[in-house]
Image (cartoon, rainbow over all chains, first blue to last red; front, side, top):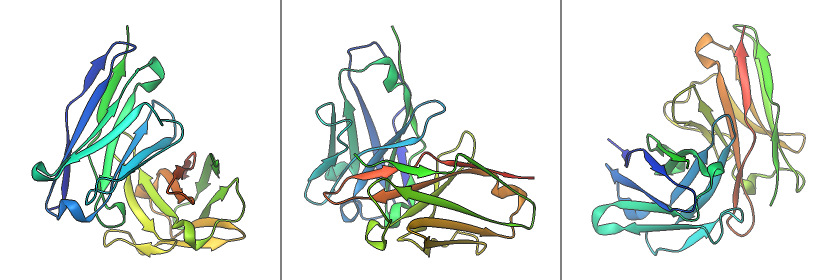
Length: 115
Length: 110
């Protein structure tokens, strides 16, 4: 079945960077865009950006422009989201989302930023 | 960046009907913004219910429907069930490829 499996929880210090992976299975990875979304505790969902998996083109939210990079490895059916210059406000659950009409969500990766 | 606004909370009686709305700070929501609706229960990842304004996934219960109503995207729940108690998020696309979530509506079935 269609599945997105994300890497495990991370604890980072302010100023560090984090890279979250998302492995797709059960469908043609290159056919659908991969989005990244995050949700801070008690906050709304935030769209961070997406990658056209087929050609690697990306589009980022203005809020995260310059701090986020989304990449993919088609040979491994895996997408990545790297966020740099972490601050406490980046503490959140990060999700990858893809497949037809955003039907598939990863299980979420908790990133905690704390000194 | 556009701001997308939803009702913070709504309550519906079991078996009742409720409409959640999704407004854009840039003006009327159109079909070209491909409105999505997601359902999220505590501790779980969101689940996509509605896409492209009114299309349903195979798992979307028939009691949910999407539409455009008075310049907003709308999600109508007809015949609410206790298991429909959740947070509902709308999601809109904007020119240039940017996308924005609404603030979410906490729906109580009581």
